[in-house]
Picture 1 (cartoon, rainbow, N blue to C red):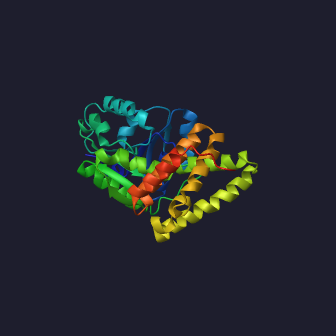
Picture 2 (picture 1 turned 90 degrees about the horizontal axis):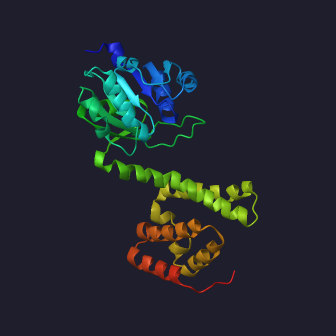
Length: 297
């Protein structure tokens, strides 16, 4: 049986962007820090300084098992090796421990070797972007939680402690959940950067290109939040001006093929998710995209 102090101790394995942000906030909220593990002694010491506590380690050690909560915040590809290390160090008994990983795409099945040794296992994923320069706000953020009953209850409690909103997600649904986040973050960033590069190519200084596009994106997101998707939808497809769509695709022949391919895919996606009559809109988009007629520039 773990003591009360051990139950309130967390060890973090993989204290990168996510691990440091969660660890720092948990420490501020009264949790004791156990071992803080990264890939080198130097980065582990840096992580401890940022978190404000803990013992730095450059590899997984048995000390991690002295904590009631073990948080695996490594990249997805590193979770299985860490699990094997912990299972080997446990001596066969992990009763009383909670092990959570922070992957958005994986579920708790990857922690099965630890569950077989008595640990309660689950996952806790904040739907937030972590750039590594500053810690993002976690208040109001959705945290996907899943796992066995005990681990899930702890994950929900931690999410609420951090000011977040825990939302149960079935393990089999996590890849789709994570892909939704990729649409809203990484893919949006790629689109804004693509638009920026297009403006730079036609003569804009980069700072003016971002000055042109970022207010557009911010206002679109504001409108989406306040009025919903269809009321916020603008542009040639929303207006039914498919000749302009043709002009866009012709102009994109001057850019790497990914630009044109992305534009056409996104045009069809907009027709599917935003148009009132999606079938008809997609057919009109397809006709515009298949047209070989060259437009005056």
